[in-house]
Amino acid sequence: MGAKANTITLYEKEPAGSVDLSPVLRAMGVPPGERMGALRFSLGRGTTEAEIRDVAERLIRVAETMPAVPAPIA
Image (cartoon, rainbow, N blue to C red; front, side, top):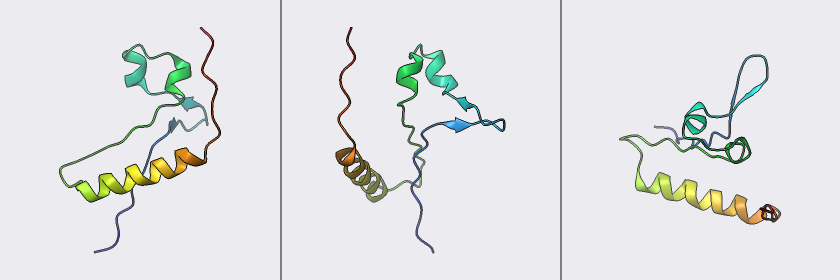
C-alpha cells in the first residue's frame, strides 16, 4: 500500500476562478475576514492517530515560519 497524502483545504475555487468562502462557515455567521483564514480538516473512520499527529506537527512547523499578524484594532 502506498503512502497516504494528508491534505489541508484552505478554500474552494469555483470554475470561474472566484473564491467561494465556506458556505458552512457563512451559515454559522463567521465574518468573511475570518473565513478567509479558515482551515478545514476532514477525518474519517480510517483516519489514524498517527495521521492526525503528522498533520498537526506539519501545521505547527508551517505556522512557526509564518510572519506574525498584528491583532485587529477593535
